Length: 203
Image 1 (cartoon, rainbow, N blue to C red):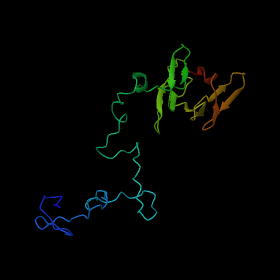
Image 2 (cartoon, one colour):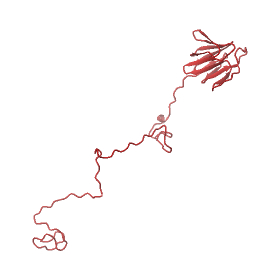
Image 3 (cartoon, rainbow, N blue to C red):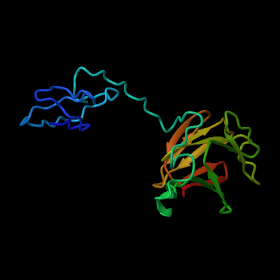
Image 4 (cartoon, rainbow, N blue to C red):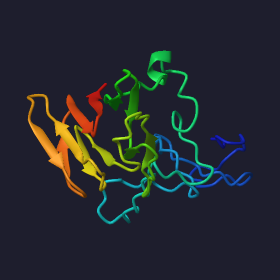
């Protein structure tokens, strides 16, 4: 009998090879295959459903309307991602609501997008816009009335004019305003400032 590892002659009943020290398997012994051992340096993969694992803190949400300095989000504050079509990149303009307008006796339209003070030589205050009216009859006071757009309505206030302010509605009803008095009306009314007449329209 010889060593299966180095071929050295072995005595009958020997347990180890005297030459290489290899263990001698008894004749007829079954060979058992052992699975390869896992290197100790590798750690087992933890089970994500294990309740004993620590819970990770959630990451803070980045608000698009207040991006941190240097943070760039595709499609925000720059060119949209290349996967979008050109039509998707364009911002669609919302339709503008019709603006108010004063219509003079000569047919001239004066847009009213903010508060305006009208008169022959008006003095405006509080952010209002002064609009001078050419009145040959001089029946319009220098600072006659204040017009303030309120969405679908217009507020008209007399500012102590000499001849007052008369608002004539579309159905012919007349509203006479004295010093400091005001009224809210819709489009289609007529303003009588002495002998001077203005139309009030939308669009």
